[in-house]
Image (spheres, rainbow, N blue to C red):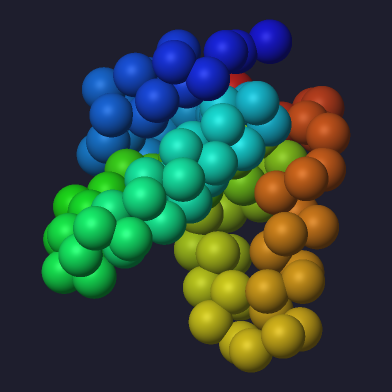
Length: 107
């Protein structure tokens, strides 16, 4: 399994890579990093937290797309998360699922 520092490094390195797959560990460590950094920066200054969130939006979308690929779903399906409540629950369930084989996103 991927460690916390490895996940953060990989997600920044693949910040614009929407192809391939991401493991559960890679995605959830990245999500934890974003949460902790946003909260800490928000304590210092809300504008810093906002700047961080905007700066990490593309890598977050990329790792979410790759995670959905690992569950054999297309990256565009993360738009379901725009639907309040039901969409949020559905996307969290999808992101928490085990990898699916056979998988059309084997790159």
